[in-house]
Length: 281
Image (tube, rainbow, N blue to C red; front, side, top):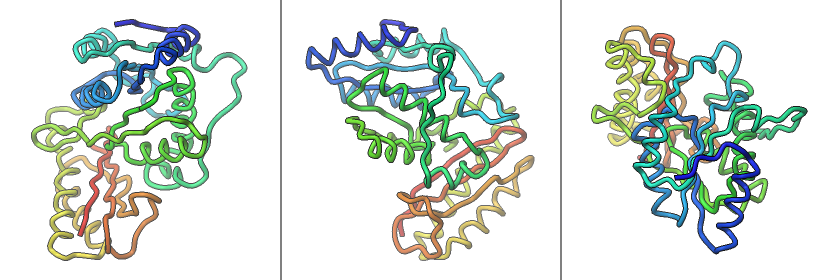
């Protein structure tokens, strides 16, 4: 497994593999890998001849008073997981390598960032779109795999890929969950044992919403009202948002007539967790 820290070296490696006719897969991450990330790596191995993992905690997607300095890191553990899962190359740049002195270009979408997490994290998706664009140009993949837990991020990357004419297949892998249903996230490491149990309020409220729709409920406000009550019944919680929206446009829906996305962000203590579920009547 190669460990590469510089852009020029990464680009030369990938270009050489492309000239050999190999299909290249890419999984971009911020590290502190868990089984959810492993599921993305497994998917990447299925879809290509060569798999690159990037580990980069991107400063431009963190806002003021967010957890950039304390974001969990474990490079040694990450590299062990990468090697165990057959990763061929790890791109491990630092911030000065990605955002070189004098850099002044950012990638911004007009509409999709104006929903869900974008409302409470202004500028976050500008940072995401910019760094993913940079990584695409560095790693030169044919296929890139992202987790569906970050549904808005996935939608934005798909739109950006289409708009900027990247010749890259974007794959959304299913959310990977703990046995009790909690969506895997690096930020779960912030939770105390008690908060870990409280965090189950997210999946419980999503499952309740799915049951309501299955039984004929078509009013999104009813789903949100039930979810609010479930979350409030757990200690140390605060709702950032609960939204029933169109899975493509992310616009809120007033009546459930087809598949909808129920998305949420909830603070458990000081830790902000997100989850979602696509629900069909």
